Image (cartoon, rainbow, N blue to C red; front, side):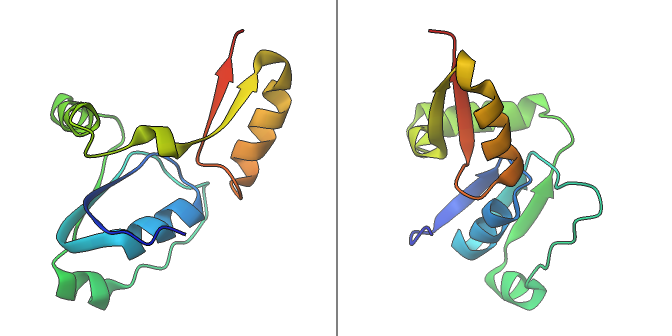
Amino acid sequence: DINESADKVIVCTGALTAIKQALNSVEKSGTILWFAPTDPGVKVEIPFNELWSKGVTLTTTYAAVEKDLKEAIELIKTKKINVKDMITHRLKLEEIKKGFKLVSEAKDSIKVIITLS
C-alpha cells in the first residue's frame, strides 16, 4: 500500500489494486488520469461522495493525446513522478511467460519490463 498522497495520479494499468490505490491516494483538488481500461465486465466501486467532497477530477483517455502525453513526460522529467518505483519486475526475454502471468494476475506487479539481454 502507498501511504502518500499526490495531486496528480496517473494509472497506466487496469488492475483493480492500482485503481483503488489511485482513489485512496489522490489529494484534495487532485486529478486521477486513467490511461488503461479494466477487463471487460469488471465493475469498479468509486467512493463518489468522498471524491466529490475532496474536489477530485477524474479523467480517462482512450489514447494519449498530445496534451496528456506532454504533461506525463513533464511530470516524469521533473521527477514529480518516480517511475522507477512503478517497475516491480525486470525479467529476461526467456522469462516472458512469467511476465505475462504476473501482469494478468496483477497481484504483485505494477509494470513488468522484459529485457533483451
